Image (tube, rainbow, N blue to C red):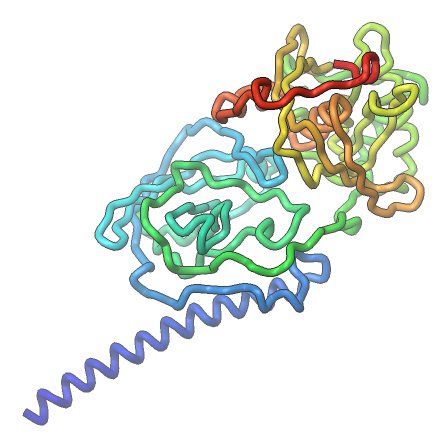
Length: 408
């Protein structure tokens, strides 16, 4: 009897020990996350706001082992991001698992831009949505870190206690992919990080990430004089298309080659054979964040240049209008865009961040040109709008403008 009682106590003690060990493991994981966030001087959250982060209690029943079904020759697709743009991904595999007595199958993804740029990355993207999303947890879903080497013999351990919020939960100025509907679990995942309840940070541009022009770009820029137009890349040319689909980098505002590129881009968009209302540096073969936009909302409708432009806010009110593109020959179609935006860019002289609210047709041009900087073309927007349901407001509200004050 004493021996049996001893075994029971031993087993209970072992179970308690294991439980404490797992809880400590999750707590250590969260401490590492907090340390990482607190050490980022220009990161998504101020150190004094870390107190607003909250988590579910560690629950080992939300840790599962999944069977991995690898996928091959998957087509790429654009996943919408929090800033209104999108990123290109491919499905890497399906993971099949049982959680709380239910069977689930979810895809995990690979970032296309990483292997297109020959960056050797082991990271995979695994976002989740569940019945707590928008209530107890962040409204745009959560992420779980997965690496290729975590997959062993076709198996992958998924711990939902390690689900965390993307940076967009804490701050503006980030491009967080929005989880597709196929990553929804029809169950409440009461594990991992909860909704952030603190004040949202307004992130300024990090100028330390800006780059100078590459030697190849400088050669292209200096191949002509300031008033000489540049070749406009075409989607019908495979080599051109690859450049147009590449995400561009921020440029240093004082790069010595910048004035010449600005002048040549302006000459290009003014070319009578293919005049436009805007142009982006990738369209002339330079993957840097620089655009020219005609400001129809200003007197004399001037062309203005913008360094490292970012759209940090978009209105819920939308408008539909015809768009064409210098890089897409013989096409013009109606595209739905946000009616107004908040633009952030770098002042050419001071290098300081400037913000501006833009509305109407000028806002449309900015959205078109900024899309180019992320490798997004307007036909991508056409595909995107087919997946969304919009409500026509004509019967509910009427808009007017003074005659002659707005172009389309």
